[in-house]
Length: 174
Image 1 (cartoon, rainbow, N blue to C red):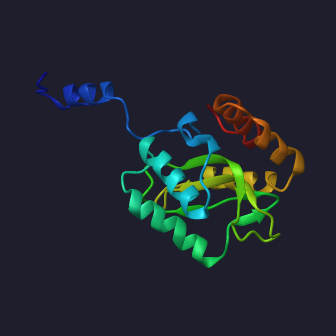
Image 2 (cartoon, rainbow, N blue to C red):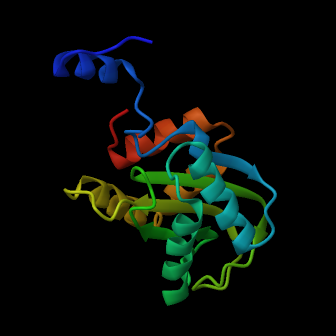
């Protein structure tokens, strides 16, 4: 163990410690392409668990509660076999997008009555300054209305390809 005698030495030691707070909205840890979840509840729990494991939240119950509070207002099943649960809460450590593809479509009370095959969870910190990530989320919502975009998302077989596609389509820096 090394002692620090000055504030400059403390800063130097702290800069050597890797940050636990991810910077990017997207991460391979948040792409789940073979989900066996069979209900909306299981999907949300699986996605919250993935965010917890990826250090996107330290308060798993509060994060999940924020998603359910939003879902209680109205279903986030947007149609076309997609759902977009989302929340704005400081229970998340950093703004995040989590993508889950189901092996078997499930009921999500979608506006068109269609069963959901893919879920895109959007989590935004409540206290974040600036609107950059809100612009990304807005762009994502518009893109999800496009047939080609949705079909591309459903085809990817590995996380890196899906992330690269989303970064390109949403204008997210790596």
